Length: 253
Image (cartoon, rainbow, N blue to C red):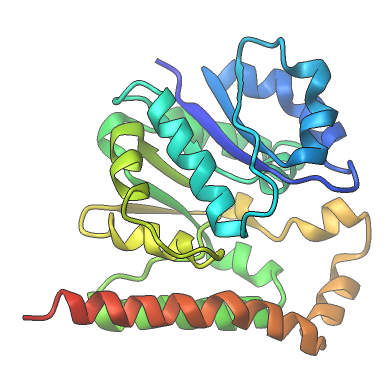
């Protein structure tokens, strides 16, 4: 049985839609169903694809914070899927980069090689993938990983980009998640980390230069020297670290 794919879809300028169209045939060959959570503008762009039987759309209610948008999609997908269905929670920009670049073959091999006993699993960024990102991304998200490793003895990517989980477990986890912001992705991992697996992959290299159509080194230097970029990363990394500490205290006798 093919796994399914779960994708938030916020595309205010329409730049991601051509990528979705380009990779859709490949996705159909490797996934049995695609659960999409489009925002209102993205829903209009998808009008021509809504009759495709592989797609199930759960439009995002207007005005929800990012974390609640994700929760709306993930919970609806988990409830619509069969309990044993394997769900790949991913992001379209990362996905299209993997499939439209030299990483395509390895990405598909990794997806196709997973067995039911391998999940839940985080496809984590490898050292090579992290080296492609701006240093402030790696340092701040790496800080969260180190906090978790100190508290729980595991080096996990709490700000994950690709998570694989059974629908039945995802439903249980989403009923426990409370954070309204993007830091809720770390909260999800906390409820699974007692048995979660990891696999480091190069295809989670930095996707922004690909989508921006610009020189990676130039964009990387720009982001590394941007105070606004530090502020953006701290806005979700600090709540993640705080949640890890809170979770550890809750589990301490």
